[in-house]
Length: 512
Image (tube, rainbow, N blue to C red; front, side, top):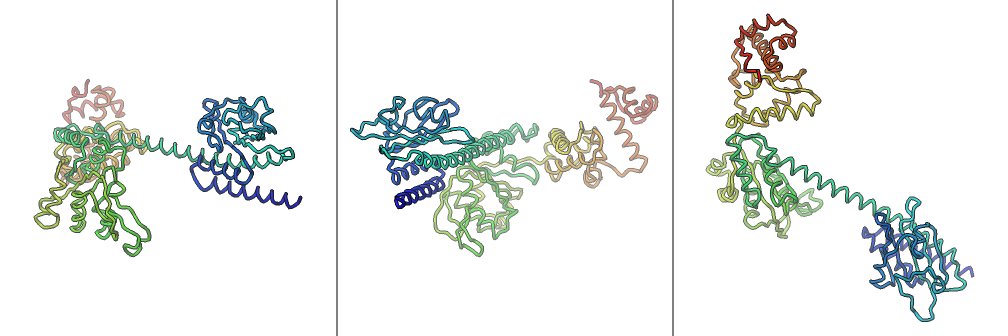
């Protein structure tokens, strides 16, 4: 007797070990449940079995995994409280049917038990999560008069508990996957909105031409070369082209050719095999592989060395390459957008840039105008950056004063939009009031050598210029009302009238 019990316990422990391995060895929950039922069939003479789960949205019970049941039977559905399985899930308590043929509540829906004189026992235990039944494990066993049903129920409850823990993990993984998918969709939508054509600021003639070219090329797969001075917004235009193209849902990979050393640029672009060089401990995909199906943006392409230019030319012609140290040919479907502030024609003449690569890149060229050639956009950009950095730095700055605007409009902006952005951010940081004044602007805009906007002033002249600036701001705020402007400046209307006459200020132009 002891030997039989020992053998039974060993069989149960072996079963639990195999079930644990089945549930932990794969993320395919359905396949893992099938393996659980196979273990029960192999070690415990299970004739047929099924694991059912409750769909909490519609209250319907469906079969997630089954063994020994036809495909039609596996599609059976139950309601809570319906049949043995429905009662087990509704009550959260196990049910034992020693002889199926004598149980009137047995629906026999999933499996038609018409096996001659054979009699079966049915044991169904709940699968419980957070003290609530979310499913059931039901098995058919050959009928035995002396079967210890209490021990059988206890064993199946342990199996159901293991299934419940696996289900909990599966649902957590699925919830995280769904969260990441939702976040991904949200971020892609944000990127699409952020890089929409309408978000590129400027309505000057040169910029309207750029918008027209972007709209023409975005919906195609054509190679684009963006040319312009540093700081003009070439990367913003590249983003906008990608996120308004059929490839918008695919990767956008940026590579700054100027930022990577010559020794690394090739391995970064095309990847490398394990052992290709000292320190190459694993295979690494290059940027072209990562961009497959999407767009690769090569910024400052004029800084590429000649050897890398040869490989890049092959990628553009054949759409294939080999990793560094590898022999396998890799094919990619990538759209190339390149940008440069270099004079490529001059570089070709000097032998620093391949002429054949230039013609491959120069399919559709967009010239981005420097800021000094789009003066009408300066105020639009300045207002945009003022709002952005006021919000970012927690300031309540409403506007830019007229003299400060005059200085911005007169400056030649060698650093283009990037310099203007930095200038406005600095002004926001140093401004303690609600208006950006001329003295808040960087010193480079206030020197004759840099901008030609301010002559060399004496102390008295500088004080007068500042005083005039304050009066102009006050009159603008009060829409030309001198009495209100005087109160705003904490002076008398008589003194203000004197100053207005002295500085030849036309108050009527502030009236709306």
